[in-house]
Length: 227
Length: 227
Image (cartoon, rainbow over all chains, first blue to last red):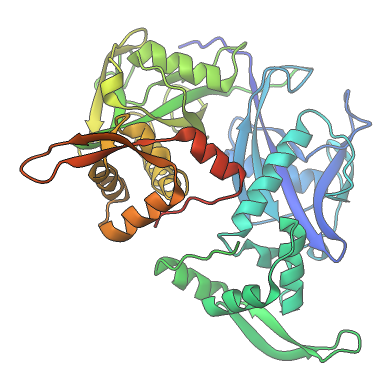
């Protein structure tokens, strides 16, 4: 059976990071082609014998050196003119990493890989600004019904770090007292027993996220929700 | 630039319907190929010059006669062996229609098109049972935070129809009093002024969904939520 179709399939990765400067996204600078003076999302063509998720993990590793376990399918972009070279349909995946835990190393099709603050983005290649907008909106909504924010924090953290993360990503002020009460009520956040001195204030208790406990609650049908 | 890639791209449509017999899905029987004795989701290959959404609307119309405005991208399925003929990546879309408003008419690659009760499904071609499982789960979760159920009901309906719809699709009992109170509190449901006599009970008020009002509430940031 011969199917006449001249469309290629690619994958792109939107990897968010977070540190004291705020929310960031991982971009690469292409080595070749029309967009070599632009920044772009890491990604590339799918090989005939690899699944979509394998392809996106491979491209991300090759172009940026970043390995991540949490990559989730975001959306498939298939507009006619999104790539000037040819018709390319791209399946986009998004993930979260802690920039401190990954050393960037551009290779293969990328000459550089860098974190960019979300409020300070260059104009991106292809339709990658649009893809990023969709990813950001998914991140914001997901943060409100799954505790994915912990992937962006250090293993142990003062509670104020979590507050700041929510305020930064949701781009709004939150009621700190209610937020703390609600988060602690779920029971998946535990004290490490250690404290951290920041400035002249009282030393802050450190917390860690208990993933196992969260999974149990999830299986019991407990819904996490923060708004 | 020559990209060596031997992967084809297709679209599939999961169209749900609902009537007094319950939740249904629209299936076709393929005219050709290995799966011609199976039922399958409507769908097919994307043309070089059409967007993904145009392709899925075209395939749905050609194979079943159904036209629908509400089709939303569900997920992209790209496992290596999902199609025995060749590597095919399929972008799945899901939609809702009222079976009463559409006349089925199979054509092109389909020799038949039929509604199947969700509890009475045949074994489907390809990985279509898996796709349907993902679609059903999306429908259930979406029903709880967007009032999409109204697309499945008649234009005017007694409140009990909406209750039954939620109970049927979510596959659980709901607290009828709380459900009614909550739904009516949003203000997007209005009385038509007419009543319907069912059996020997008191005639039931008829309601209709005010989409414009819902849009206004949505823009004002009011969140619809039923669980």
